[in-house]
Length: 391
Image 1 (cartoon, one colour):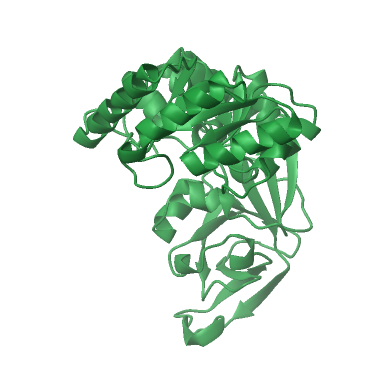
Image 2 (image 1 turned 180 degrees about the horizontal axis):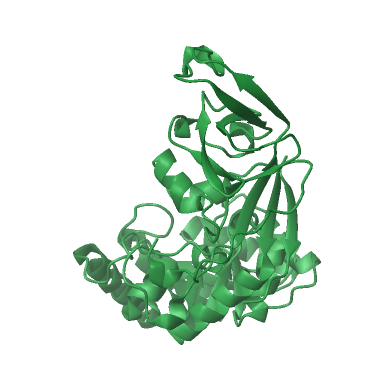
């Protein structure tokens, strides 16, 4: 992670006592990250709180982001959006990944905007609007190069024409146009430029169909911080709000981002182990020397990737200690050597890195994946607490 995107290290601190695996979510960091993105982009920000706020808690992330300057919220499913409404959140909320068979009536009754990526989706939304006696607020979704969600160029014109007719009939209001950039981490990438050009063509087609959307949005965290062309009327930012920094050059000092999640696990047992002893399943690790082993009650069911076996470490007593043996479903074993580790001590499995603990980026490297998968993969058995720290 670029040092420009992290705050200076703090003095080493003793982690708080916990009796079970626990994730501490720093609400102050969520709020400060949002402020940093808003300052850096000078553009309205839709805080993306999908996947339970990237594993940080959707409501906590939503409230912190709104306090930090975000003006709208984004999720994938209608169910996620309705939960935000039931919690009393009253800003624009967009849901953008639904089957045509979804109950759009729930979304309309909750005043949730919905993305429309196909004529079939549009018909389902219009039916729901007529059934509920409401007018649906929609964002037409164009596929600009990822071959995932969104209408392809071949059907985009028809979708815009049908949306225009539905708007004239009073069934919908086309508030937005949206797409998604596949390669946004470097502004000079030819594919990013081509995708932006496709979106501009999609915009012209929509306007020629008589549509007058008030907000166009493309970019996530990478695009928001790397490519001003992709900011348009609003940025959709999720990963950056929880402190997952994009790769590349930050947009000035305002783009400082701080990881907000710390994962702790208590030591449940410590044992002396002689050289030649096997550790864990499958004879995968045999001790080359006598040492002491600590047991932590976290495993792949809690989000510790099994593939990190032989590479991962945790922080105990201020020192990095390697995970030895295969990662199990419920537990890992840590070689603590001569450190005075005892049952009841607390290991920092991951955190911001202030005290030398592994970060989500470290775990992503060990697992050959991305930080997003690490933080969203922390399982439901892990207790979560939201704490307030000054930033």
